[in-house]
Length: 564
Image (cartoon, rainbow, N blue to C red; front, side, top):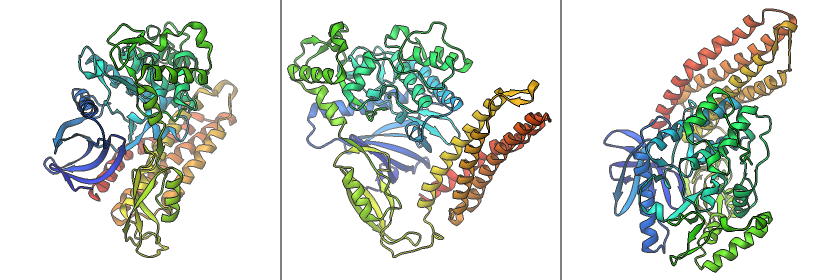
């Protein structure tokens, strides 16, 4: 890995995909940490494909760079070195929504908050004629303080532009694409609204509404099938989601602000369309699907330039075909057209695999895990006193990243001799663990806030009882908090992190006190006591948590940045 790109000192690689790498870097002129996204083109690419890839890459910077909003990632600039373009953007610390959803569905309050912030970003972008066209959980970043940032405008289109996006290829992520994207029709703001509705469904249900075993089936479901209703969702949210993902874009919300108003007001839309809602697909990767038409909708342009019937011209009777039959028809159609573009890209997309978590694993076991995943390992020997001999201490790409099958994963392996003690733990190992624990704490705090609302709604003061026993939810939260506290106390912090580590333990303790106040309040309700005073015992620890968390986050990030 090179040490510099222009005046940016490269600290480490933090992600990679089929067409690029992302680095954490330090701007030595302005003196701040930034993220650098560098375009990497595969060998053997022809000149036209190279030109289109470079144009698409630059368009990401141009589309996002014209947007300045708290919920949109900030682009500092697009530069070039040795003919290779790269985007400089703000460095975000937190997690993607996709990673958060790996743990299951979110609470209603948190899901609504995230969806609302996405809609704020979309409304701002749409007002400035920018349509994202690839809204999905992996492109939504959640900071440690709960703020949301929308990223990756790589396939965004500026409304009314005549750039290559308009006459080139339509891209998207199958599980989140609108029916018009699948059909190769022109897209507008309502495409992003559809995707946001899909994300809201997934946050509430824990599953993508159009999940299936293969990409063709996913596309079939998006165009033809309605999803199952949301389990346990309030009726107003069910109605909002249904309207957002209606198959007919005229039946959807017509702008993001309109959907956001209903969401924040907790009310159903004025007119509820029978719309769509629907189970997860591994196909969250961005793929090319079909040329975007310069012709009227209902046609696609074959490579030679002549028009051919689009999938939308399939007779109604044929729509009863099941997904496997549709798959065969799609394959046949592609072969007849001679380009093979759709099928080829779908097959390429399905060749992507997820990088396993190797940190803490013995090097020989890590090599086996990678081999099973269709990947190979580049080993670099290091020597640290806090790790066992042969233990993997870091990896690039990180666990959970999607890469092409056959890619190589770089790992650092401790070859400094066995060490049973963790007292001298390397800062990078500590922060890796702490990052996960901080995300867990943020999620638990959100669950506590949601539970407070639910408990309040279930109090029947007249009868001195709880309409619903909320203790099981409290027990689950308390078990998670005690487990988190035990992990924090067992984790040995490097000296420079000692004080901030104690702050983290304090924050967990405040959450424990808040849940204890729930127990006290519910007992007071049932005994006819002063339950309001009992519940109010949670106010002080809640305020203390709210005041301390930003300070903790700032100090932790500062010290972590100084270690790089």
